[in-house]
Image 1: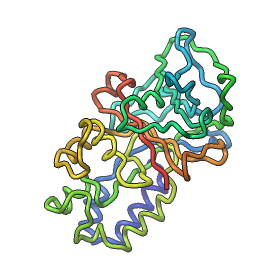
Image 2 (image 1 turned 90 degrees about the vertical axis):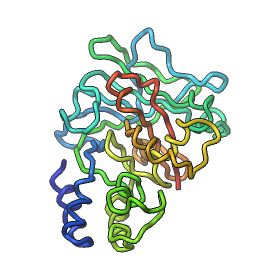
Image 3 (image 1 turned 120 degrees about the horizontal axis):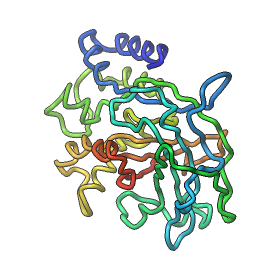
Length: 288
């Protein structure tokens, strides 16, 4: 974790919470890797935009009936800080993320995790280490996003007080996803957390930084199947089955805007992550 972010959260917690509560809350933080524009002599671990490198036998991802997906970002897994995450993230190979961003139809077709056919509008391509890959030109009908080299910075990530992982520690009998009487739900503490994490940012692993409620909830509901109510009692447990693979925020430098200042998210089950089954990752997105 970066010393500043860990220290800031420690100070924030102890400023707004009783000492014992602060320490319990800090114990719930999960490590994540923030991806930020590389500066100075920082090692480059990936990129936003530009062109991806793909094996010759891998076709450019396409949503049948709609067209090719836009290349969002890629990450060199071997270049990431080793053993930084608490999930079995690959230690070698490259991950490339693609999304049908509306360039071809003015946003008429929407990728919705609850709409199974539309899931073809988002894809993760994993290129194993040692597999030859070449830089691939963006399809003529798409405009490539500007290339932005990325550096990696390990930092703690925060879950909302109403997230089941936090709620079951401080208020196990509370109504799921609802505020409860406890210092972690106090307005001053919640406002301080909001100010600390004002922007979602680009991230690997850790807790998703949501724009509109817990991201895992959307994926869990879709994973349970069609017709699942938002108050289905199975949802909190199903949320535990999904972890963040990557999130990519709107980014002015890369000329990326997802809806109204939104964020793209890919989640995956830890067992599928360990087996490199990125075809089983689920995508969702949120905006203001």
